[in-house]
Amino acid sequence: MSGIGVLMLGAGGGAGAAVTITMNAASIYAYNTPGGTATAIYQLTNAGAANQVVNGSTSLLYNWCVPSSQATNYECYATLTAGSLSGLSSALDTWLPLSSNQSWRTVSNSGVFDAIINVGIRRAGTSTIIASADIYLNADVS
Image 1 (cartoon, rainbow, N blue to C red):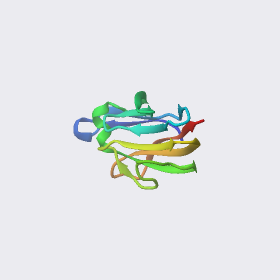
Image 2 (cartoon, rainbow, N blue to C red):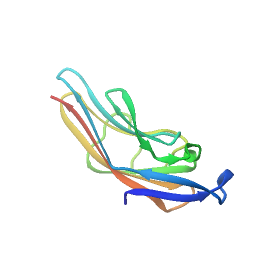
Image 3 (cartoon, rainbow, N blue to C red):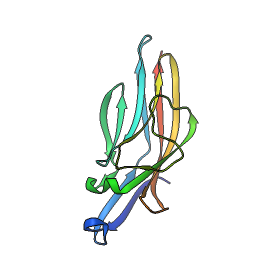
C-alpha cells in the first residue's frame, strides 16, 4: 500500500478535525569519493516530517502527518525487503513510537551498499496500517 490516509480526530483525539497521513516512495542516494564515507538515511520525525539525510545534510521529502501536532499519536513499522542496513538504524519488524524520531540508514566506506525498506504507519493502539511506502537507500563510494 502507498498513499494517503485521512482520519477524523478532534482536540485530544476525538471526532471532528481531519488528520492526513501520507507515505510516499523515496529513493535516497549518497555518494562520496574513495577515502570518504557515504551515508543515506530516511527519517520520520515526531514533528510529522519525512526527511532524507545525505552525508549529514538533512532535507524535507514531505510531511507525513498534517497537522504535525498529531504525529506523536502514531507508530511506524519497517521491514527490510532487500539489501542491508548499517549504522545506527531504528529497529526492524517491530512497531516503534513516533513520539521519538525514527531513522534507517545504509553506509559505505568502499563500494555500493543499498537497501529497500517498506515503512508503514498506524495510529498507536490500533492494528490498521493507514499508509505505507517503499524506501530505497543507496550509499556509494567509488
